Length: 120
Image (cartoon, rainbow, N blue to C red; front, side, top):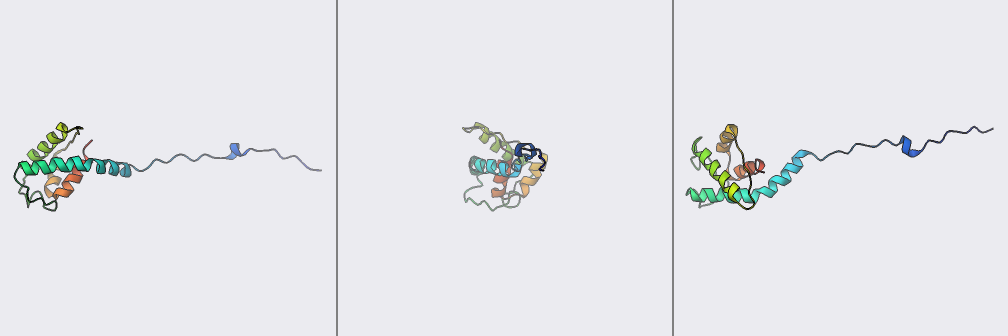
């Protein structure tokens, strides 16, 4: 004699896996890459306005090669901030005292990437 086994549907036993979101770093990287051209233009225009470019060289260091100090780099960053705000579309760039100290050690290319990461 056969015994009847209870039927269990696949839906009842199937466990749904939670959806995993992509890491934030990848999203931020795409955003930073999209913002790099407007930031690069703002930085280049400011370096030109201050008479430090030409010759254009993104490998030069802000403190040693361009002779910025903790006071003049703040003025430079504020000018870049204004250029980004006045652009179409407008971008907001924020910085703090820790960023100012770091900016002195950056090359122009690294500074562009650091500004792009703080721009929205």
